[in-house]
Length: 159
Image (tube, rainbow, N blue to C red; front, side, top):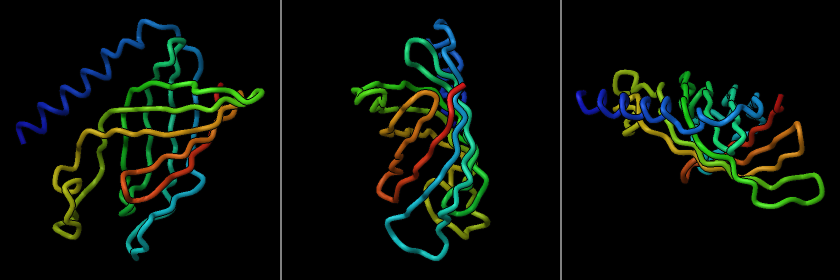
């Protein structure tokens, strides 16, 4: 328990002291999930994440944000994160992008032993998310693989 508190405190500190705070805010990004697919077909898997997220994008390509979603086990989950947007190349007015975020995930509950994964045992843990996407201002679309379990397609609008 003590290590969990120390790790959580360190991660929150890293996010709050993120160098992005020195850059100007470029825009905000409101996103939701459109499609989720798990590679294995198990009865308990939730393919309706109901993700809603808000990101703050900075002029130096850094970002921070918060996302709420229902995890694979239909449990309310929050991801508090920081990261970087990468512009890979453009085709006309459409930009091909990549994004890497890191932060804290909270919301996995073992429900008195019902679920037996490391995520459910610790409840709060560090998270890392990598995605590829398309951006054509003000719209974005991202494909997010989640480990070896599946993919989520998200999209939204910058303002």
